[in-house]
Length: 309
Image (cartoon, rainbow, N blue to C red; front, top):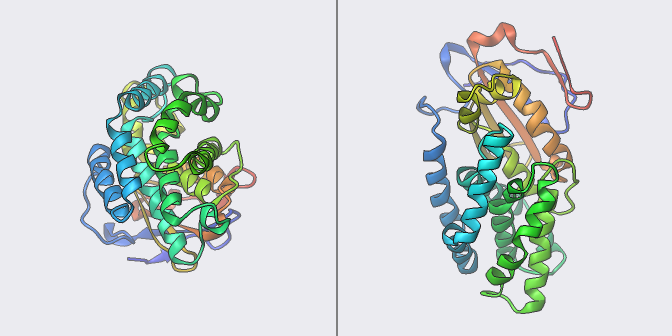
């Protein structure tokens, strides 16, 4: 239930509105249940299957990704390095599934509003091909962490070349497979905010990654003693929903338990939106419990990385 808009003057790259909810209600009306990342990951897998039900190649590719021992080994090791050596949040299978679900949802919403992926726009493939690109790139975008966090978006490409050849040869002739392989690598390379996206598909992968920000991702580093603004703010994100927008094609709804979650929107999701190439198609809606009203910032400035009262 929308009761009051707390922000009227925001210096950010998308439409962001933050609402507080009276009497414990939230803008998204649903049963108040604790978020569970593992359950969400299982649901995400089923939702991905539903989104791809008319795309036999992508459905088969999903099963390949889920059951190939080399790929699952890369994902497991990347997660181990991220959590145990860098004290980061989840970068494993759970993150892969949730980010992939989100990225495919964004792709569908954009396409529904007439914003075609570059694969279709440039006549290098079909919408089904674009789905496969986004699927594979998002699912595998973080495997480079297994080498090092620094330039992980580059290391992943080196690790995946041979396995992508094997995967794409199941569905495409060499010339077409080469195009899709390059497109998948482009999306992996640009998913990090250090590299600007150059395609709709790349933007979907980037935002799909950035919107996996609910509190389940931070519980492992927090339980190991990492108590800082990154872990605290991550724990403040209750859930994230991606829906069709009102003013823009895509609406990202972020439900927070306290105002600390604003750090995640500004410092984690914000930079990805800036470099996604699809920021003009996004609107971000935040909700926070009314009891935090007096501690909520009155202004956010993404450009200057400043939040002031």
